[in-house]
Image (cartoon, rainbow, N blue to C red; front, top):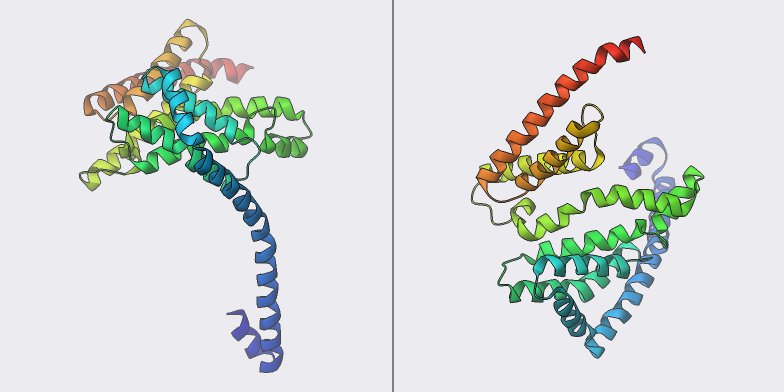
Length: 274
């Protein structure tokens, strides 16, 4: 488009020369940008090769299985910690390669032991989620250092604060494992897909509200804590594959929403006179 636009405004020779210069500049910029990815991928390839030669992947599986005592939830928690540790300081591409080669086979093996039909994409998303979350995990926290430089704040405090915010959505990868329909897998109809997306959105919203203690107003006092717990329970119900649990979660969410409407209306006169 740029070439033809220039050709109409100037002579064809100048337009062709500018076009060639732009293409070469684009190739140069692409090469510079790809160099960092190539180095990271090559380094990750060394790790993958070491895993294959030393059979450390099988050893890691044995360690996780022994520490978890055969409990899948405990195994997922240990795998989460391993992903947070192994993902420290890695760029995105290398992060995924390391997670896919080291941690994902562990979960796949444990799922087979427990005879749990977990889609491979759910396993990879689980480990990759926490691997990326390592960017906010102190003391490394590369993303925290970048954010602290912009905000002119303490990097460690920024990292801890960012990690606290990130962990409020830490339930989501677990949902991928036990509720793969949220990834729009194994759906029986398009209507089920719409229902899954809707309940998943409301469920994660309820879980975050319960963690933050704020919806329409600040949740204070005994009633506020009860509402926060109710919201977290509603989030759990809405992120399951049972219709009865979904309806119960929606009912709890609606009750807390109505209470918040009443609470905000009650606080409006005080806010107006403040």
